Amino acid sequence: MENQQVGELVSETFTWTIENFSKLKNQKLYSEVFLIGDWKWRILIFPKGNNVKQLSVYLEVVDASDLPFLWTRYAEFSLTVVNQLNSNKSITKDSKHGFNSSESDWGFTSFMALSELCDSNKGFLRNDKCIIEAYVSVRKVDIKILEDQGTGSSATIEPSEQEDQGQEPSSVDSVQVPHSSVTTPSSEQVVAFQDAPSSRQVFIEPTDSYVDPSIVKVHDKVPFTPVGKLMDFRGLGKIEKVFVPLLEEVCSWHPSLVECQKKRSRTFIEWAFTALGRVLHFLKTTKVKDMNEDACEHLQLLWEELETFKFDLAWLEPSVQTALNLKKLVERAGQVQKQREDVDALEIEVKRLKARLAVAEIDLEVAKRDLAKAEVGFGNDTNMNRELGYGGH
Picture 1 (cartoon, rainbow, N blue to C red):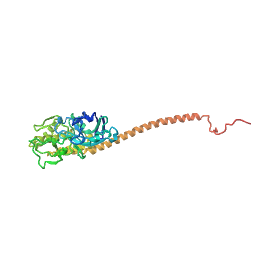
Picture 2 (picture 1 turned 90 degrees about the vertical axis):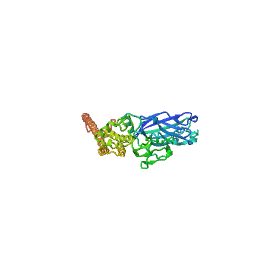
Picture 3 (picture 1 turned 120 degrees about the horizontal axis):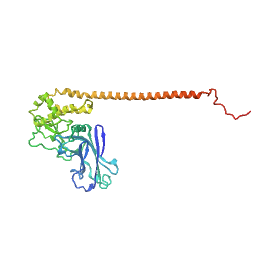
Picture 4 (picture 1 turned 60 degrees about the vertical axis):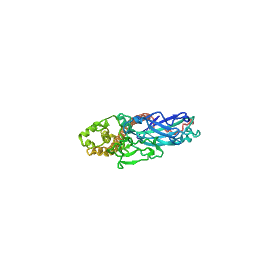
């Protein structure tokens, strides 16, 4: 497995060699597990097609059912069936997706025709061997958050806009219907329903009604902080342990934060205080020097998410806006640092050149003295152009 960095992404290529491909009887076949950062992935294929006469290939999050509440992971990836006769004829398809509990795998139901795959002259099967590669990229900032919080279970993500045709989960039934106790969202609560066959999520704004978290996306393009160990927060709900001390501190300063949420449902309260905890944790753990463009965008998304929960945030907004405005300061500091490094480099070069000049001046004086000695007794009237001659009368 090859590892390299692409911009702000950490990327790996995993190669899966499948022996005796034509003899496979399984409807589904999984590759071995591979890691990117601390996250486990694997390739899923349907050798005979997922209800189509095509090879179906997907990327899957491993042990999705064991991951924490509202887990999400963002990845950009490509899947390739390698042509073993001519690599330039390999078939590759690209995608990006926000993996979650209702869409733990994503890929291509119609990746390539089985007739083409099984044609020995085409080069995709050689000695009954099929080679599939997955090139997967996750964001460095997500891995940093995982390391800071000590968990590899989920990550900050940016739900992708699914634009490419043919990309979907392996199962069209992956969107689950809420239990009978679930209150049906009103027309005002539902922002948009996407086509059911693609198993895409239902977009729902925060409400007081209980809704199944597996089909909810609170706000488009809002990153989720990794879910670590949970603990009770003032009897209102389970909140990540790392957030609780921060929430206790600000709630003691601003009791209205708790009062305004007491009449809400438990699920709504947990979402609300988790959103507040994310912003507080970001402000508490991020240094001024780290406020680059990505960090500012991250904070802006967290702030927009928090605003949907209708807290009185007049006390917090100045700190957030100050942090968001640090981008220019950080950029200027970077420019000043670069100029300082340039000046230091030039000073070093000047010192080096001065040292060389001093040596050259000494060499010049020595050369002058040697020349003066050599010229003694060597008159200027010596004719170097005269003939040597051979004697005569």
